[in-house]
Length: 438
Image 1 (cartoon, one colour):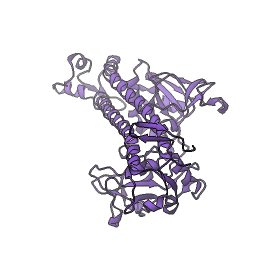
Image 2 (image 1 turned 90 degrees about the vertical axis):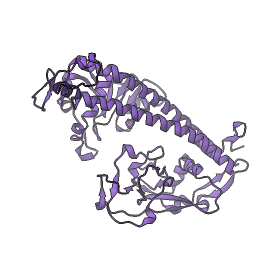
Image 3 (image 1 turned 180 degrees about the vertical axis):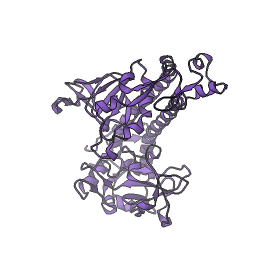
Image 4 (image 1 turned 180 degrees about the horizontal axis):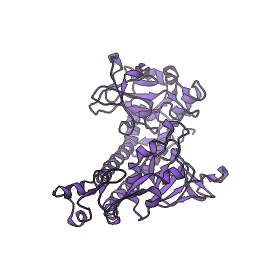
């Protein structure tokens, strides 16, 4: 039985799902000049929402019907998924109010609330994130390797709609968790930018050396400024600070290439070590624990930088604990022990890694020999230690925010289906459990 007071509805009775427009790809441009941005499936977070700051965005440099110009707050749904499981069918994203103009592309459905519908727009967003909604779209999708849904199939979804008051209460609870997760993400992004800027200043642009050479104050504390030389010398990779060297990755860093044990040793019950085996484990600064391995063969220590060595090559994050690594991952740590320095060096090698990516195909990879042979700088150890002392505290704050974000996301994901189904009811006195089957 449905929860008391919840009304059976068909989604199409309260909203209309509108098709996007087939914008011409030859008029796309990755050079941003203020023109409208075409929203793509790649711009969605697979947990809901957009990630424009983390993904490639493209302007449209042609004419288009104005009805496909989106407004802040508009909700789009993904209508095509390139995996047979259909995990992202129906994933929603809200258009941000950031001063930019966004365009409604094909393969995305725009949600338009019908006049007179007694539904909260924010509640619908959470409904679209529910496993029940995704399963319904997958079960009615067309295609095999690539799944497609359509506005009519989305509108055919049937569910029980709570009262307006309860819709608002559910939205507030889930929205508060989501807001805190987003705040943590932005905080981490700001801290990451600080660490990155310092690394670039010291080890890419050599600002302290240039300041000394030109007789300027570098702005650094005296004990740190004194560690830098006052002139440059020529090297095979261009001018570098005097008394620094040029060497290879394997001479500066301890690198472990992953190895995948037999599949039957993997488990999700905590037997053995946390196991990271490839690209699926990347996407955040610190990886989320996914699976364990009962018979690991290659290991990474807490604080090691993890690098994706199979397509796409060069994605990185940092191990939060002693773990096992599969053949799609390598672990690196500077021989002097600096975890933050290692992370930033590997990030700075992204252009080098990209050359091994086979133009983004599934065959891209980098071998142990090629990885070890990548040229890199060898700064004075005292400078690396000074960098580590400053940035390690920043990394620790990023890790704390990431852990809290993971915990909040797990709580949100656990509450979402229970609140949407009515298994958990929200009353004035708080949340009480009520099984919908009673």
